Length: 347
Image (cartoon, rainbow, N blue to C red; front, side, top):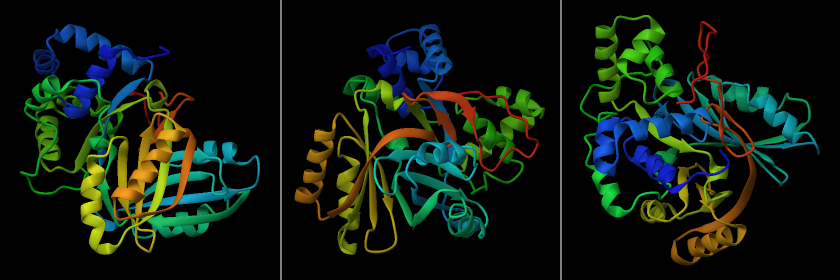
């Protein structure tokens, strides 16, 4: 499909609110039928226009860490390098911009030595790389799981939000989603965030009763974040901007609170150092991006240090994307599947 219609955006918005809600519950909230929603969703998934996935939260314990790296390379090398990096499991998101540090990548590490090796050794050793500027993520204030495509009116959005949320909660002891017995379940939910216990039991060969119990523990632990992604090129917001800002330490909390309600803001990342906030946005135009920068500097206690317009998104949270931002169906999971076996499932 070349475009998305209003019903598509409504369904995507609903799944952004309740990614694992049943079709029966969603149909009741939206005033349609479960079969209609199910068929529409399968069509959206099949062509990569939208997909539901899970990703483990990174809290900084057990060596887990996030970093954002800007990579400068020789002229004409950026596209090839981006495709090469897309095959690296630790590099989970890749954007390409027209600037000196043209590649902006997000990396995840599990062990204490993972990130130093990647940032100090592996990236710099690649042919054509001129420099790497690394920013360790101190805090993920806001991620894209909170962003909404805007397909529902307030009444329907409230109705969907009223559906009981079975995707997570803080009512259970913490678990490590990368460790067994949860690792295989986590990988299944990364591939398809709407996978049921029965689906995962078939994929892993585990007894259904065991899988159901372990899945319940994993979801209740709040170790995973679920989100419904959409092909950015099929939305009315084709411009992706990353903005590095300076915020007085005492003003960070208020600034983040106001950014949560600022249209277009998908991600707010806390960084160590004087440039201590990175804001990711989707906007309608370059002019809209400039107006947003004016708003940030005029109405919030921050200074815009630098910004980059991402002209291409090559990879998002492990999923390879096409030129419109649709999922290609190829997932590079992290950590890699030890069996080496993977059947793409753009869930």
